[in-house]
Length: 147
Image (tube, rainbow, N blue to C red; front, top):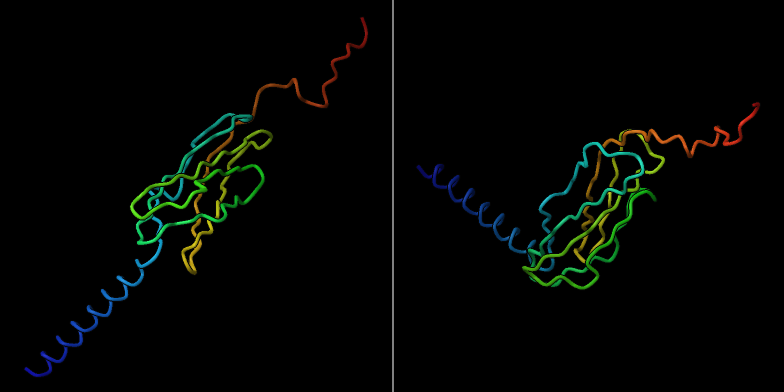
């Protein structure tokens, strides 16, 4: 019986430590995204696809996004520059320029904030169908040769 009681006390103590550790983790700013990835599906080449990621500061102090960096120049982010108060929401809008990029794409957006030792990464993906417009083909000449 004493072994069962000892095991019970150890488990109870472990649960207490776990709960205490979780409470300390939420001290300060914390971010929670509604979605961490977005699939644009199939888009036509030349389209600038746009998506807005929404997030909430679930912490106890203001959240400050110091940098939002895309994995390549074809992706442009814009984000909430003002501190986001606890319980309030912010956005990161991402634009993907599909011009000259037919085929599948997977891009990442790395977020740096004032959350200690944490970097968040968002993802966008999709497939770009090639344009059927040949007017910009450098191999085609607008000059007519012959009669």
